Image (cartoon, rainbow, N blue to C red; front, side, top):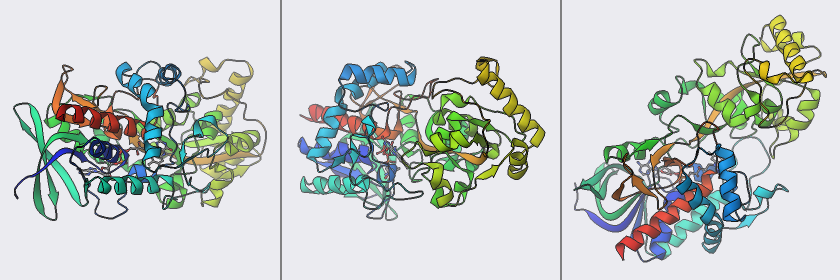
Length: 469
Ligand SMILES: Cc1cc2nc3c(=O)[nH]c(=O)nc-3n(C[C@H](O)[C@H](O)[C@H](O)COP(=O)(O)OP(=O)(O)OC[C@H]3O[C@@H](n4cnc5c(N)ncnc54)[C@H](O)[C@@H]3O)c2cc1C
């Protein structure tokens, strides 16, 4: 091992959370470094591949803190750490202003209110990958430039492996770089490695038995290193069983032109989701994130097909910014169409009589307002249930896609990592997708990955700077 190098603040991971922490730390006078496992100039991470919409629980980040806190509580069914929720609500507006001061350019990407702070240029409304030169990719470049201007370092190809702990306090980190061990001593480590969506073992332990049958709707670089290091240092881990994700064409398992978009969420939430027999298997009314989580827990997550009729396909099918109607076919995805439910089932490989019975029972429940008697129950959280009775009928084989994990390392409002007894581990912070407590819960509430990464990246750096001074 070489002689240790010294910094005041070291971020593990060069996504939005790590870069925000490092740039803000450097701005406040700290000697900062980012250790980034990726070796390429355009190292893949979720922050680079993101859609670029900054929102708080699907609300405009510039609403008042009280309004944002209420929105987070509604979205999470109140199952959010109030300290973290209040931090996001208080700082969301300041976070986008700070990003703008660092070169971020925002645009109102659509008439939807909470799309007001979308990084420019926004991605094109087409199926498949489209991140090169888009707003998030551009922002990472700007932050990196600001870091260098303030004498901060971004060490590419440097994978953090272990925290160095002395008398209960984190004093450094060791990492692998070019086949050697790099020892770093520092006053503050900010874990910002993105969480564990790409770790099949952790997925099996906490989410579902078949990660190989769930679409990895992310860059594949967040593999749970931070979670492991934090746990070894005594951190509490919270809410590991929930993830943020979407429904996609089942063909996306093999066809990269069909992910991360179009999402099938809106169609599924307006229609029904059935298994290979043609039986309903989820509460569609809870929406796409909930359905994706339900499917991911099954022994066979690839068993699901969405069944809808023409009015649903022409409305919900066109509702999203990158709508499955027509982007599913444009991307090469499977869409079955038939004039009767029995013919549709035969085409899609489902059991015709059974599917016809399922649809008839469902239509009766909608007509006579008996949704709660269905098994599984059909709620209306994501919109009203609609009858499936107007041909042509459509079937879309789907899969669940995991974007990022919602649970992770427990932190306080400063981003300090907490032990199970609630005390903070001195010198250790976490930010972004690797943290837990804000999101998830029974309602599977999603608060927003980019805003969470930026707010806690900033807060961690600011607390570390106060400790340093
Ligand atoms: C397709 C897609 C669309 C999205 N759209 C949106 C959106 O519009 N709005 C929104 O709010 N959220 C969106 N998200 C979610 C959002 O992108 C993430 O929540 C957020 O970017 C997480 O940032 P992060 O910095 O925590 O992690 P990441 O961006 O994943 O960065 C983590 C970094 O850590 C590095 N790393 C991992 N392990 C180590 C290690 N041991 N040592 C050193 N480095 C390591 C990785 O290489 C990676 O570069 C989207 C995500 C995806 C995938």
